Image 1: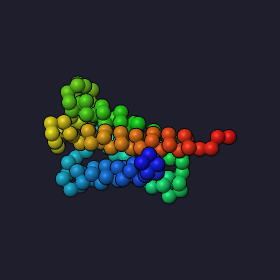
Image 2: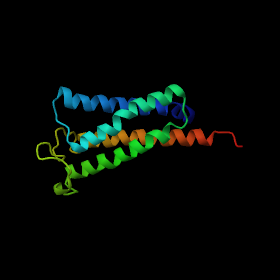
Image 3: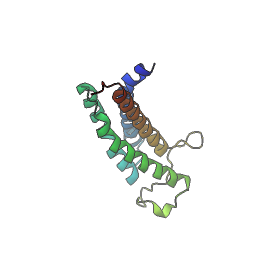
Image 4: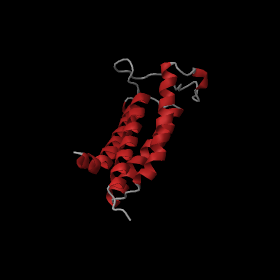
Length: 145
């Protein structure tokens, strides 16, 4: 089971990045929800992951976590920050967004806590965990020199 999971985590991470990218495009282009500054930063970090992970999969690059983790870790920080802004834990005066498109506006909310920044946070967490599993599995199964 471990080998099956470890062998597929790059595909899981790539699929997660793809779904997150398509989801954000759906929210802005189909539902016409305008992205705030923090949403744009999250997009800037998520969209390249689709390509980086695809290239890593095609090339069978065991170093792909080193390319992915800086993006996903920073994405976790930004999406968590925005989620805390929306939850009211961080003051709205600390938001770097404009008056026209505030970072605290909750366009969607499911189950009382699932918002767009929460979905972004979850996506970045899944990708980060996949990279950790991939790294641990690959480096624990290398022959010793």
